[in-house]
Length: 290
Image (tube, helix red, strand yellow):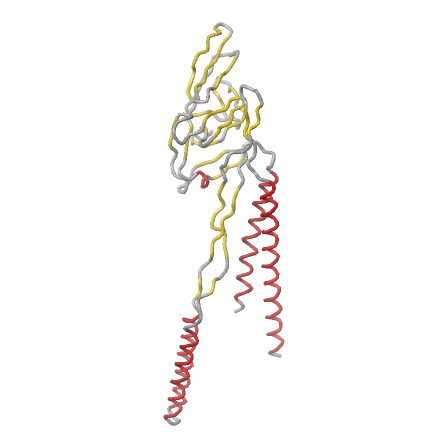
């Protein structure tokens, strides 16, 4: 079996996913709140060729021994010496790898560029943390902020149209909405110019946010690897602060992505060259048998 053919094929498959991931990062260069993805590779299992050689040697010894029954004792001595030489040779052979695979694709949650919009409904998180939202099926998901809205029942909604958790209900027709850095939400109305606190935004944190499962449109759900969320007030230990009137841009670094693209392209090309070479060797072997 030509192992190099299959080993190189694993490299092409892994780099194809890497290229797809880089392409997705680059196309979301201008998407507010987008977090770039990182492909993590891992080695496949190693094969010990000594075990395979030992099995072949044992079969050869049995076959030679059967012929030695009709021969002299010197033949057995020669076979024994050859076996020792073979053992010494195979002991110097180290296991070889069988290729590469994608171990995981994780999210890079480093902070993106902040853009000031001065819109009272725009909200960004400066630092760690996620807004928790309630999905239509009642489950909970997480987002990094964006342009908030007010729902039909006057509940504060995420940019995706999901209700924030804890729920925050605003009075009808507020004249202004103020979100403090610590998450306190206050409003003024036409009947009262004095700000009234109507709710408190909390931030959810994860031990391993990079392992969150992206659902698209800036929504993430937890996994076993990410851990369960813990909640805290913005500005407290290990929690970021809120910035009203700002939006967080994409954290994609175009220069880094272009470098990664060139490396991935070259790695894919080299793996394909190995496949081509392995194919030529197999063709040569087949021709020798004719």
